[in-house]
Amino acid sequence: MSRFPGVDYLMFDSLLSEEALLIRQTARQFVDDRVLPVIRDAYNNAVFPKHLIAEMAALGFFGANLEGYGCAGLNNIEYGLIMQELERGDSGLRSFVSVQGALVMYPLHAYGSEEQKRHWLPKLQSGAAIGCFGLTEPDFGSNPSAMRATAVKSGANWILNGEKTWITNGSVADLAIVWARTSEGIRGFLVEKGTPGYGVSDIHGKLSMRASVTSSLHFADCAIPDENELRGAKGLKSALNCLTQARFGIGWGVLGAAMDCYETARAYTLARKQFDDKPLAGHQLVQEKLAWMITEITKGQLLAMHVAKLKDAGKVEAAHISMLKRNNVAIALECARLSRDLLGANGIMDEYPLMRHMCNLETVKTYEGTDHIHTLVIGERVTGVPAYR
Ligand SMILES: Cc1cc2nc3c(=O)[nH]c(=O)nc-3n(C[C@H](O)[C@H](O)[C@H](O)COP(=O)(O)OP(=O)(O)OC[C@H]3O[C@@H](n4cnc5c(N)ncnc54)[C@H](O)[C@@H]3O)c2cc1C
Image (tube, rainbow, N blue to C red; front, side):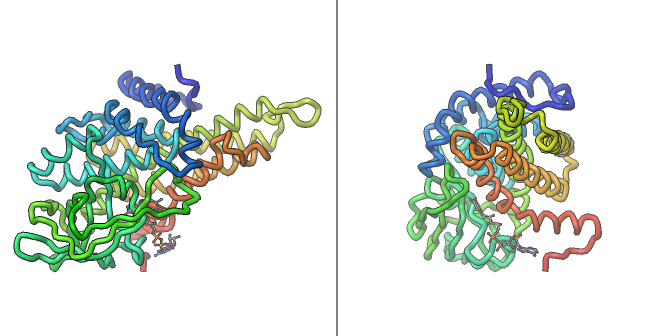
């Protein structure tokens, strides 16, 4: 049995099918047995625990909500629960799975040719190949529409030039999905490792997402065969649609980090005594923080559940997912900060997961659309007035 009791204030589990509970249990056990024993060292030493890739593949975690080509074909609630458990382990691990599934397998599934799908999807699902997604550039993060990377048609090839940065899995990827400007607008390309003119360098010195590889991708007259264009992808909206898939997983994932923080603080404050031999958890100010956390986590769970149901019904909008990502990341980050506070000095130690989650969540707040950008998406949805510029 898992050491993690789960966080369920409002009988959330009564909303889950037997199948979903089983899938969550499998992911939970995997995190307890395989991730928690190694994650502290991996984070401290800034290494991604590569040996877990094959194990996660065998459990069907990659592209789990996609149909066919060896994918598990789970519904979006089941998929979300896997993301939640993985991020309870570490946001870096969940990021790996999000990139592989939502940012590499999804675009192939949605926009790839039958040949591209047959060639890549089974390999990516089984972990035999790893992928990355190159959209962000050194000068363009929140506004990728201004990207400088170009792809120019030359005979049977596209010639790619430019730079992408902050790319998760960059140097470990066999396949990069790269977005570049063409004479017909922004298009997506499959760039294989080892293609002449394609270079990768890792970013060092991160104080967040340390157990995750982050790289820069460089393209200098890099010739991409015509058949490596993602033919179904037209314009930036196709790239943003991939991000919508990943943001959905984030909205669930961060609940796992929040739950780990809350449960750590709850257990600690019940055990630790201050003033008249009384547990910290018996003091009103401490209870106020625990009450805030469990309330926000519960609201976050219900939001995630409803958005998953809309997604399964084909009714979800990108603006719905913006609310899920923005809200759940914000409350998870606050849970990490409050929990750290409740552990006092011990809260800063790597023996507890709080500072690791807190630092990771600073990245999660920024990537896949910053908190500000999702605020503006919601603002546009309710006013009809775009305020990005
Ligand atoms: C660890 C990590 C992994 C990542 N992985 C990937 C990946 O795999 N692939 C990929 O393509 N990218 C990836 N990213 C990049 C990420 O998506 C960008 O960092 C993000 O989009 C923000 O861009 P920026 O860092 O350039 O910040 P900027 O766009 O420069 O924004 C800086 C600040 O200004 C604010 N801001 C910007 N515009 C506005 C506005 N109009 N109104 C109000 N505020 C605004 C932002 O909200 C933010 O607070 C990753 C980033 C990190 C840190």
